[in-house]
Image 1 (cartoon, rainbow, N blue to C red):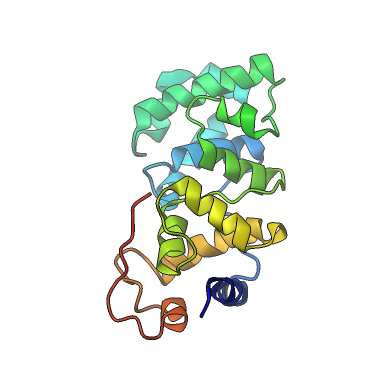
Image 2 (image 1 turned 90 degrees about the vertical axis):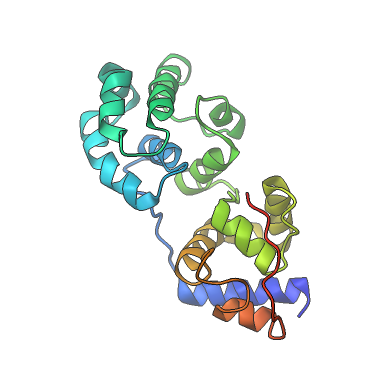
Length: 217
């Protein structure tokens, strides 16, 4: 099965499994999504969803977040990984949103990536899921699956993103990003599948006997 054929099969099967994939992080708007995605670094979505209700009840917008302050934010997100640094970034970016963007999350990759604690992946999630702009954020699940399925060589996250964008039509990126995450968690996890066990791995590589080498994100 050639790469383009694998890509078509994968997209079709993921659409069958997850026809309307929900965003796994609970949020209310672009701002709360931005904060939730920032918190999800080195932390599970489940943990973030346990933390954010109390955080967003106290600080649902940038002004309230700045008023809550770094210590107040830290107290509410302490159970998330890297909490002190995240608390600093959340308050700092909220202040920038107030002073430079009228309290609104900017609809621009460049502006988002200039915010403290916001990298390319976080910006991509917000641009795609909050604003409907074409983006294909690559997390650890997607980086792993792209290699197992022979869609990219995994030499870098940036390379994986470029390869996936070339293989799949732009209008599919938003859902496909989520579909791959759900499949990677439920069927082709790092420990649950080694590239030879799950349905898609078996279909794409029916004669594969040993696990392929996978580079970490």
